[in-house]
Amino acid sequence: MRYRYATGADAPAMAALFAANHHDALTPDRRRAQGFVQGAFGEDALRAMADGGELLLAEDGSRLAGLLALSVAADLPHPPPPVRALLAAQDALHWRGRPLRDVRWLLYGPVVVDAAFRGHGVARGLYARAVAEAAGRAEALVAFIEAGNEPSRRVHVDAFGMTPLGDYEAAGRTYTAVAAPAASGGAAA
Image (cartoon, rainbow, N blue to C red):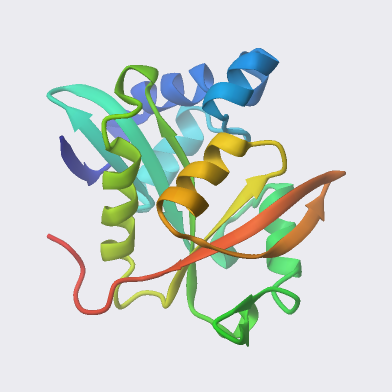
């Protein structure tokens, strides 16, 4: 598996991966079994994120296996409701004894893995790369998991050891903020 930053040319494949795993494209049974992503991530949005150096990819040969966004939440031009609510909840969410507002952090996610590559370490590889890439840029990576997205919770909290920081609400939905420390030292090559 090869990990790299996305380029604008990757936008069509990334948009197709998002669309195939979007909450609204999946049956309730599929959402419970595999998890889901939300938000508006069409080609234009993904191209802009890639051009901004915010997307990490996993590829097997020329096939896109997964992707992960790594952004400065406060710098997003049009943050979706869960991100706006996360930013608003920073005083109530604590990382290592400090309000999140006082911590340098990067927004981790969304992350999505192609169905053919699930269970093969792609998510773990993207996570490890994100932790390494955050070194020197942030103290922590912060993600949010919507209530009911148990597959995401199992991966990020149970398997990767991300720490729950607390719950918050956005647009009538409940989310749990979770965090992990960024690597110390330089970024990965």
